[in-house]
Length: 324
Figure 1 (cartoon, rainbow, N blue to C red):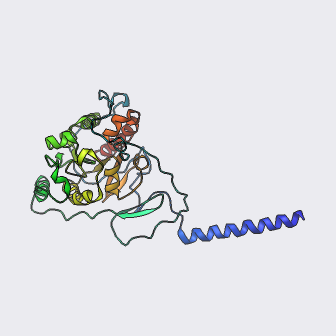
Figure 2 (cartoon, rainbow, N blue to C red):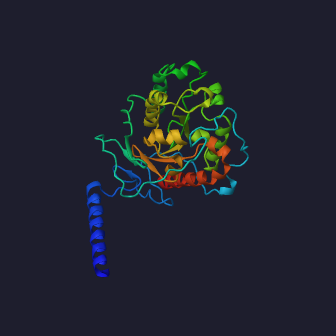
């Protein structure tokens, strides 16, 4: 009787194994994150980030910086007017449970644009195509043309409450572009990105990288302030994103740093939490993109500054290797 029970158990195990193997052959063994078109060169190791290939050099000397000297002197109390229940990146950092390696992806699209598989459940989004390069002008002229095209924008309802359009500022030949979420009250008043308390912290991060604000380019997904600093809505993002894409096209940076959830998810067309996206390079039209936490989030969670510094160190190393 015992031998018969063992034989019956072996038959059951073989049957289950055959079903599992058949399922793998049908759906494929998909990893938790997969970039169509192959990974960035050497981007899988945090100690050897990918290399860009734009050929521009700014001549800025970059040295090793001690983490203990970074991000000091900024009050960590919450900024006024911020929503306590806003999404991660600026205000929270929830975690997302990854699916098993054998989870099947959603139906694949036909777009040739870079794409990303994201977990729980899998979704696939196409990254918007870069526009054709603006011809007949220098890079700075091309950036000015984008601003001219934006004009006195009334493409969404945000224009009714704004004081100023916050287009962006910095070096039109920048190797590094920081992309945030949306202007706040200080930015709306001055018409400049990242000039409030979060902007002061971003300036400290840039200086810790042995750079100055005028060496980089800084902009946001949205060009107008949402009322009460609320989260951007999908229609507002859809109206503003084409101008962001044109900005990046005209600058052609070596690296993009996406600050917070909305910047990272909008650029990568992903719904993965920033806590999972950060810490590794992704690809945005052959440009390495590093997601990290928004400076406003760091004001509430100073313990996460070390993680941002780790992300920034990868950017420093990539730029140094590319310029070397």
